[in-house]
Image (cartoon, rainbow, N blue to C red; front, side):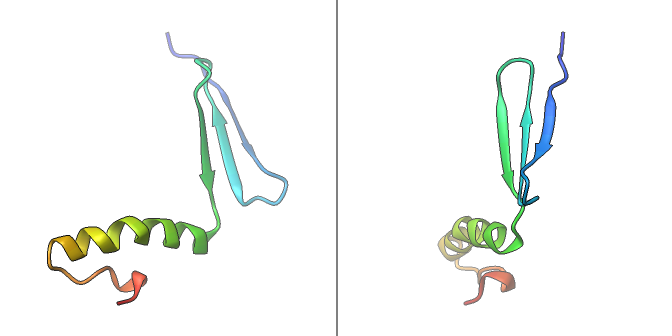
Length: 60
């Protein structure tokens, strides 16, 4: 049986934290600049390995 958890924003609203009844906790950083940086750290090398240009958002 699933148990509902708690969802909270940090005081500065830049992080969302969700907890479940099974002690699982997820943390999402909501800063757009940080999100782009983290996504590009994965997307750009993946594109390069496939001989494709990285997403425009990630620069060249």
